[in-house]
Image: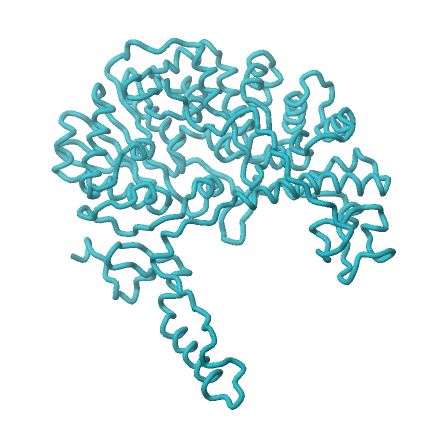
Length: 591
């Protein structure tokens, strides 16, 4: 009983848990529930004193009472508000703010080349989306382009091992109306089916850490919303399966539950003559029909399943398997496989497509076709041009950069160096600046992004959206730090206990909630002279000479102290922002 059930009356139990659903209350809900009696008592005393015990009450007995609106477990299921209006406001603010800054700069007769060395906005819109999140790119297009260089494999050398992305498999399951025990059995059946022709099967799961560079991406995917399960039991019925998977803590609990269930004799029967390796946080377990045991050689501190898949592939290859099949429909995994396959002494394949149209991508043959230098450069290129943790460049395609990587040794050298160290050297950043300039204007001889921003601004006579210019040098350097950090993690895929630098020093910062957030810039959004004239501080009325906006021939903005003056520009309907040339597609497309 003590191992299977949670004691809700245990004084040492820190969380407040629902008896009926096993849901853990978030701090704000727990605060209201635990303080309900005190809040009600305070409300009663206030009602009595203000309406009954005062000789001349300011509030009459029958006046409307204000609800306390205490939050309960029901509030956990409430949907968050849509961010559509916020996005529209930010887009409009960007358009007005960028133009306003330019007007201020021209009015003060500042050098526009110096002004454009700043992002001229709260965020670098070449790298940030309208809602402040990372810009996305079509990763699947890169996978398609790479895959065109080789035909699908028809024969897989035996013996083979199959390495499976565990959470990708779980996401495909239909969990509703089942118990968690039934789900565990179904999941294991899928695992055995995936590795039907292999003697060894590995299931590799992500590790969900409290602080991660994936925090922004998980927030964008609504991670952390929905119902939280702390103590999953076999007989519990699954309700709202998709919402359950919307929380990182739920997925971590589910992984622990699945691994513990698969160790049980009734589930081990399904393995017959196969070996199953499955990860749970840093540990790895080897499970057979007869027994289970820990596999200390596969214990790893790696966070991403993408990198740990390669670690398991190396272990399988060194254990005598002639071929290793990685089942993961993700472009990141394809890039990692191509970059690392020369270090894995077995024939490497990636399984893609649907169950009706499965294809095996011959990674080893593809790497020979592309060449070692190109494959090694892919890791740096993919990180720099956009992935889950690093923003893409607005309107810039991965395929264009890939073509240059294939042809130009300068590109290969720069992306080969990215991720070798945890720091970005001045020499490497110079190369990355030059590459960025060619991404925006292939014919340019300019090698500095600040100069190119000025040239493009002049060429368009100032009629340009800020997102159409390359990021300024300051913002590009922070982007390079993040890309280098991600590439460094990828390049250490074959190390079980790699050293990982502090992301705070590599392009991220800690927000007010303690989560990692992108640190977009080190300097100010605009020169001080522009910032000082960007808004007036007068609170009574906008009139000369007190209003700095009027004094400089400018319209007042939303940043001015007085919001009801007659000097504000007439608002127009915001023009729809041009979409990037690529859509937000994360995985390898299915045929």
